[in-house]
Structures are given as structure tokens and as C-alpha cells.
Image 1 (cartoon, helix red, strand yellow):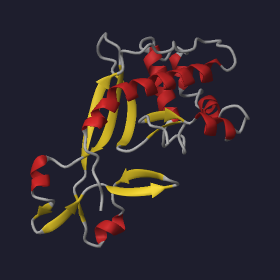
Image 2 (cartoon, one colour; image 1 turned 30 degrees about the horizontal axis):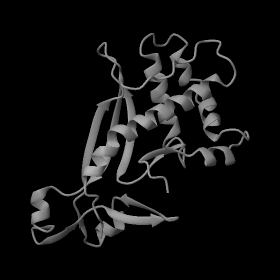
Image 3 (spheres, rainbow, N blue to C red; image 1 turned 90 degrees about the vertical axis):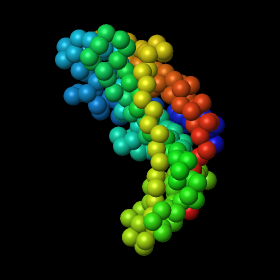
Image 4 (tube, rainbow, N blue to C red; image 1 turned 45 degrees about the vertical axis):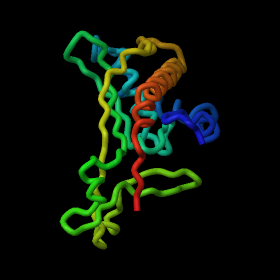
Length: 207
């Protein structure tokens, strides 16, 4: 299993490609009209590289791609990119949700509140890979109580050089190429920033 928190599924991208080249590339081409083209058709005139990178990341992850091109492992729950268009600083912002251990007060009470035994995130293993998940409705309906703690990391993605957005009249394949480069750059930055935070957390264990 990949030891990084975030990675790119290069092998699956090639072997599952309907065009024989890149599954992600197909998704990018399908989202040019009404999506990526706004980065060069005059819809916006600022933050084009950041807008392009955010679209590239959104396309590479779920729910757009399932399984995703850019993936992550527990305890990361989600990773999103957005644009801050209000000031003159780099505008790409990451929001990463991480499953976290209980606060001290709840842990000291050993999970017992109001006579109920509370449980943390559920652990599940699928195809040899363990992940954390919220309880299903039937698990709650049978009377179990869950206290799910999340740490939300929000930070600027400003340290890394992002590829420029393609220009109008770009060459064939350029949009897909630059999208892959943007996703790779974001993936590396998420590992750099989020990795140390996760290392300090005691990963919660479910029932």
C-alpha cells in the first residue's frame, strides 16, 4: 500500500482508459465545454492557473471519478480546492477533513455520556485496505451512539508553482497534460502540509 496520504492511481489510469491512454484524460476532455474552457475563453481574467488547478483536482477526485485518479487514505475523509477571489494573494485554498480522536473530556469519561456508550469512527477493510467511515443508518437504528470527531484543515496552496492555464487555440492534449501536472503539484503539497498533522493525531478506532 502507498505510504503517502495522497497519491495518483497511475496504473489504473492507464489500464482502465477507454481511449487506451488515460482514463483521467477522457474525463478532462469531457469537462472542457462548460468547465475548463472558462479558464481561457474570457469568462475570467484573473486567477486562471488557480481556477484551472481547482477544476483539475475536482475532476480527479470523487464523486466525479469513481474510483478516483487522485486518492487518499484514512484518516483523511475529504480534500477540496476552492478559489479566493477577494484579495491580491494566491487564491487556491485547500480544505481537508481528517478523522480525529475524541477531545480529552470525552476520552476521560471513557465514552460514557448520559448512560450511553459512545463509539468513534467505524473501521472497515475492503480489498486489503482499511479505512474509517461513519456508521450506517441501520447501525444507529439498533441503538448505538457515535461521536465522530473531525479536524478541518484550511490553508492556502501558495508555495507550489502551478501550471499556467491553457490558452485559446491550445494544442491537442495540452489541457489533459496541464491538468495532470496541476493534480500532481497539489498532491505533493497536501502530503507536505497534511502529513505532519496526521502523524501527530492518534487515529481513532471504531467498534
